[in-house]
Amino acid sequence: MTIFKQEIKSQKLSIAIWSLSIGLLIAACVLMYPDMESQMEGVNDMFSSMGNFTEAFGMDQLNFGTLVGFYAVEGGNILGIGGAFFAAITAITALMKEEKERTAEFLMTHPVSRTKIITEKFLSVFSIIIILNAVVLGCTLLSIVMIDEEIFWKELLLFQLAYLLMQFEIAGICFGISAFLRKSGLGIGIGLASLMYFFNIIANISEDAEVLKYITPFGYTEGSDIINNGELKIEYIIPGMIMMLIGIIIAYVKYNKKDIH
Amino acid sequence: MNAIETNKLTKSYGKSRGINELHLAVAEGDFFGFIGPNGAGKSTTIRTLLGLISPTSGSAKVLGYDIVSEKEKILREIGYLPSEINFYSGMKVKDAIKYSADLRHAKCIDKQKNLCERLGLDLNKKVDELSLGNRKKVGIVCAIQHSPKLLILDEPTSGLDPLMQKEFFNILMEENEQGSTIFFSSHILSEVQNYCHTAAFIKDGRIIMSDKVENLEQTGTKKVTITGQFDDKKLAALSGVTPTESSNNKQTCFFYNGNLQALLELLASENPKDITITEPSLEEIFMNYYE
Image 1 (cartoon, rainbow over the protein chains, first blue to last red):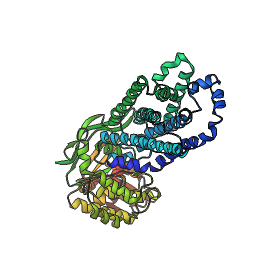
Image 2: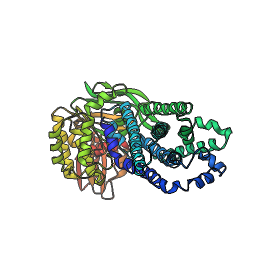
Image 3: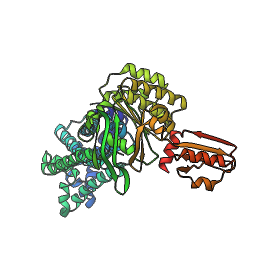
Image 4: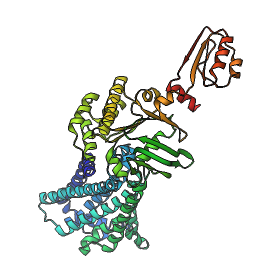
């Protein structure tokens, strides 16, 4: 696992910055909740009467007056967007950076098969995502304890699982794309994550576009669905996991045949 | 057994040429110079042998292993120094060397230490702060520390100062004496002439000549330099004359591989101030091939 260790080691600063940024931002929102709780009834009414904007973020089905409802919107958006961008950036650079930073020649003239390189890099990307989510969960739990609220374990763990799967899906797709790239692909990764996020907004606004929920991983991270149903929508998760697997398989097929310049 | 053997090895990049039906044989234990100008196909040959790029057609074996199906076995037995080496940003020199040894599962602390001392490497320096020459030294340690059977070096001396080049070749000669085959590409002919036993010339993706260096030096061609007035028309009429670019108003220079009697008769009929007849250097032979 030499390559795996090197990947984790080389990204420790990036992991720390992203994990703490997302974790502390969510914690800050949770810590503000007690001050906002008394005014939440008015906020609830306001947010539930903003037409398309309300539907776009699922706020018509959430109660801001409860911590779980508040967390579903605030925490969900922070971890949703932040986590998706982080997963996209980490995965899209994983294979491509060896050629971009001209280290591929060094690495690939050592006795390690390309399959091993891909496997260790793919495992490192997924481990890094797990580390980020563990830190974020820790920050969230700590902040809930600090404001003396009861921890909504079931919903919180379902949220976290949904976001973890969403980040895995984006990472899997971006990992596949990374195998084709030689120079920077950050724009592609961030663009893809943003596009998926907007697909979910469009699907929330228009019933005609609901099919997009099967395409975007944000479909199964919808806070209102998780709270109201008490479970994740498996019909959205399955196509997502298939896309993730296709991304990873493409990475193996392409990278094993790729000419390294 | 040959350490490297290619059979019609071809790599095409669409319209642009890579290497074309390349035949190359490097004997085990040889110190082999691979000579060619920029763009002739030296790096493409090396990168194909190492499996970094796939051949379009043809085949090759390195240390008896097929370059396509037994790539990992080849990489286990070789050491490679690329012409431009880069390491992972943020690593220290000692981390880069250790990473290379770890990837090979090699335990070679003593040799590593010895090489670092001989090359004057500061192990605690960050690789990002290193000059081209110092990066190359780190690359040399990574390529040699595990005592490979075959060392492949792509233009290894670029960036190294003359003293370090000398030390580097001393290290290579020691490795060669201990049984390693050395294969290095270069466009610096004096390096090949001074250190290699065998050399091959590559031009436009094809090997145009491959032989022992001593045989290449003894082509029968003489380099003739005449000082003073000389009738160029008479010279042009003589067969076996190849003019060189170093001729001027005071001096006439040419390579000659024709009848010696005819040359002496011509020289006697003129009135030169001075004449020198020497063996051409490998560089001059090389230039002759590429004109």
